Length: 100
Image 1 (tube, helix red, strand yellow):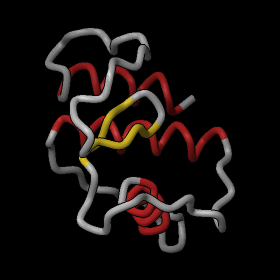
Image 2 (cartoon, helix red, strand yellow):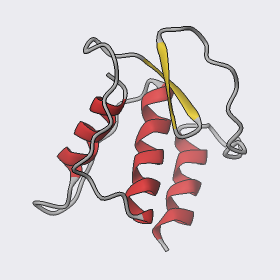
Image 3 (cartoon, helix red, strand yellow):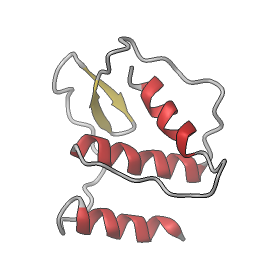
């Protein structure tokens, strides 16, 4: 229910009206990039990414992570809103660990 609304907002405000591209993974831009889903993110200062093992990735969380990754790749700022203990910080920590 939430995902179609999010896709529309991403298309309007981040992709500036272009459609969300089909998830095809191009070659890595450089050795300093790590693949997350179908995106390449620049490797962080922690070095080698770690597989965050204590997280349970439901479909909803995977959808939210994909949207967060899309914003990071676009170099845009994002404000995560939600109730206390909804998992906002955990989601950012997961992406940070997964990308070094």
